[in-house]
Length: 84
Image (cartoon, rainbow, N blue to C red; front, side, top):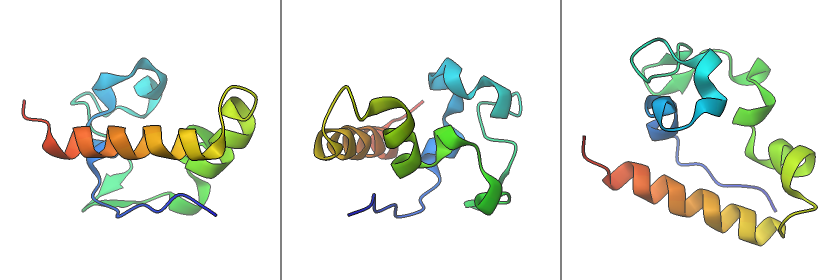
């Protein structure tokens, strides 16, 4: 089982909502590596951008993988429906 991403790019356009992504922010809240809804460094993206690997590194002792995925999906939906 792995996280299913629909590649909408909303997480990469809303970095300003979380300080953990500050080093990726291009100054506008968007990831500096986002290029037309795609990550230009996808194969080498940071650990925090890799949902499954981030779970193993940071969250496996705190919540189940299902809970972690559900939280990520909820955040995804929030970002898709968010209006500035």
